[in-house]
Image (cartoon, rainbow, N blue to C red; front, side, top):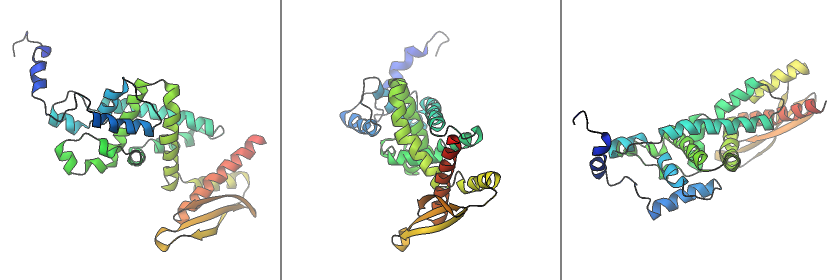
Length: 264
């Protein structure tokens, strides 16, 4: 290539040699699949969103193997901030009296790749991914880091395609709220310790936990546990393990105590 030759002069030839799997033209089948994802987020498709959401599902292994010029990483970068903003607004609204430190930990846990990867599985993102052959064979379609990144990229795509007031509710409903539920179950936030710190500081007592209900087969039990303070029931929680149920009960108890503090 001579010094005066422009990249645009050779682009048509490069495009002609690209892998036949590159979805330059949206097929009806692909459009139907992407429409299903948008429908799961309660969004109606528009002309702007098709190429963006398609790009959001294109892993870098596909770009490298097939010769496309972009992958989903820039949309992922944007989507990380989009989910973070939605999560911040949600937490501030739901927890007016919680200190900034706990809110930061909640947000960080909720927007982690592992948690977002689990949410992506529920939204059916795995089968929609465009992966290189090697990544496909190594199980990339089920890898939570890839799925979480793709979900971030999808949020970046819809942010560019719809008004913020239109996408904030579904992001909160289908991503933020489920993510906060997951981190409670997985003990990303230790509500039991936080409840004990609160009660020792303000009541000089330690909460007690007791099982109120236990059901289900041995391989899939569900426990209901209540937390008691000074002989008074504060709240209850459920979980597939006693530890999960206690943590869930402590989370609800903190909400009750914070509500009472606000009224006082």
